[in-house]
Image: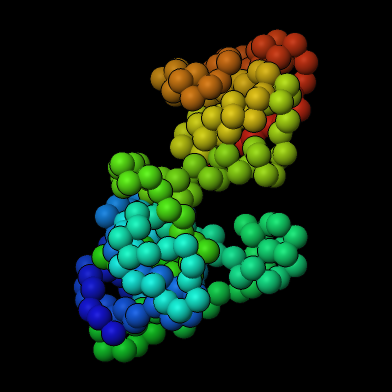
Length: 257
């Protein structure tokens, strides 16, 4: 066991506390990653405020990037020093969802109370979302990381771990958008912008962004939106339909995401 620093939640709605915790070495199928950057997702804030309950004390954080500093038995394709993105998506590889090619829907539960971290005195410390990345290091399952180009900035790469894959995944995996289809994305925040670029990558014909802010609509166009509609307009759906010349094949609502 080694001692590291982490931001620990002891009470919902209270500030996180920077303190020493204990981290065990990676076991079968696991790796250790020393983190260089961690993003703050709204989910982390909701958890810390108590919106979804859960065990306390806990370490949140699930959008991270760093370098592999330990490799457990049975891990292939990863070596110490590799730059990686760390995400909450953990896949067992054996359940029906994993076997059917849907690792994001893995059905094998993870018990964060029995994870690799403990309090400094050996007590239960919940590894939230199978990551606990508000810390100097994490030990996670090898399925939760992907190697990244060495020249990519860590503070940018960590955003791939949740916001980017949530938006793009909604378009490509959930909606199975095909080239030539039309989409509307309501909300041009972090997830919405990535839904927009996911639609662009998928070859959408028209991509209509809807938001309350003209500045965000400018960002949306930079990410690939063909049209922008201010939600403050009277009957904005008419403007969206006019831009497409028809109804949408898919609508993505990312407000609050």
